[in-house]
Image (cartoon, rainbow, N blue to C red; front, side, top):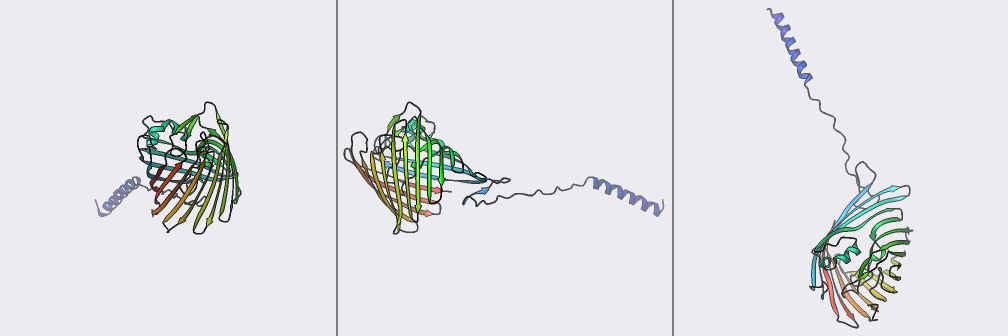
Length: 359
């Protein structure tokens, strides 16, 4: 074998090895583009686009630790400590008919003696199942669909809104399965709601023993709202009729920016015991909330109840004080103490201390 033959043979061998390696080579796949979560500012803060869609989603809620107190308020004890978890999921998108919304809020309470003592009543009022042992429960606080001003589902009625302080009693049942429509013209708003009245619910003056009102036939309620805002003045008028009780209620509410705070005045009237309001035949409440510092707000309040038991014709009055303190961002302390004095019966001191973290 000469030198030429050796070189040709070596070149052929190298070519064969190189071909084998080329056949076995690993080719890396092209990276696929990743869609990062985008902020959606069309519906306010906290919303983001669901990847691959034009639907905006918001997740929030709060954790609340609270101790309530009041004489024999819970049957076996003058005080009750409990914890609540509240999770809210909201989805929104624009359509040719307006904003399409869906809301799910899930709420659970642990260690609440009110569930243990009145589980069946709260099951009707809150659309939850009675637990028997009743120490805690998990239920839908609100779940509904909304398109434009039309809403259908289970949600809180306008009667659930109340004053800044924690002194007044301004409603009875506030969560219904309903169909409603609201016209919102900015400075002027009006709405009408058709509500399913629960088969049974609490009727009680605050601090008095709970009385369960039982309705044995299908109940339907009609509630309406008109409201207006002009500068720093807000006015709201509610009217409702409970056909199961064949009774109704009316509530007017005025708030205005006065000096360093907000003044509120509310008047209520009930023709008799009904799902919307039955704490008194008539009532007047007022409070004034002012910011003592950037973190501290103080709200004194008072309420007078005419014919508060709707049977004996007794009157009662209440005074109270609510203090709100912002510990750090999204963490707040609220404390309230109220003194109630009826014409007949013993006076009472009640209230609560609350720690709440929002997210």
